[in-house]
Length: 405
Image 1 (tube, rainbow, N blue to C red):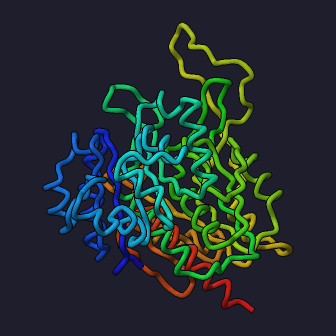
Image 2: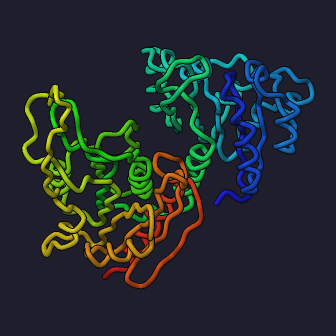
Image 3: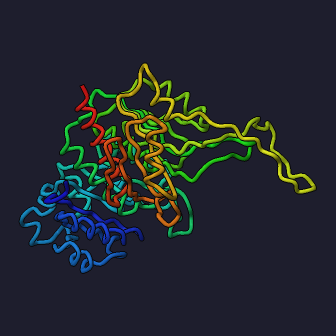
């Protein structure tokens, strides 16, 4: 998909600029031709020599270069690429882009381009949350600029929150998704897709709950991939710390019972992908007040009852059943055997099995390795970013849907 593509990478100033080196390396591995514009601030964090060595191309940094500008270099750079990527995109760069300023080579190239632009924001959490930055973000989105991130996490400044630059795997996935949308037909146009994601929280009392470690990243990526293929997509999400994908209708729920109700309300659909990690049990008789610790230290008795099996319920529907019902099997041992058993037990059309044991790094991580289990057999996929897994899965489902009478 990326072989032969041309990307102009614009590197802003910020400690996250070091990720640009790895991004260039990963792009080069995919036979992408990368040219680099390094801002004056970016040069405080990465060197032209490092960038030139990895990109195997001259690094551009001077708007008034006599050699480059004799050939109208800022226009040639901005229009010879298939995609412009700004990483990191600082608050300053975003502000200049939003207001059409062009006082250096980077901003001049961005203003002169007729090609799509993907920005990867990175800044202090207070800068990100500032109304001015959010106004600029809204303007850029309205102009059609693509956004990757930012993520929530620890900052170099010691603060924590949204503003951390996306990891290279996520940036690569965003680049792949952009080119995927343009190399594939919108095969799901006119189709409805339902995706569940994240955990459910089953309350014990107003303070405590039963839950799991699901981040929701894979389910959110599936919803984004479905929308990218033109599907009218509903994402039913448990509690997660993720921004909803563009072009997706988000329905937030907390418990398994709420998720079931939201799923039933979203039907009928053509494809249903159940990526949520729904709690198997809930507490019988949730307490209205916080359970206090007694002097004896005796633990309270919690009676558990089984939650509704949403995947099995939808797969067994006789009227209004989706044409394709897909479940996920997150296992820590006997992954394939458990997935095959789940396929038979649930009555769905496909199970996406993955190993979520602590050593795998999948739970909450950026990459995944899955096995696609159907009645016809097993297809094992290599390690790849969760967004790439999602894009491949939705392409597979779109093809299967097209084969159905």
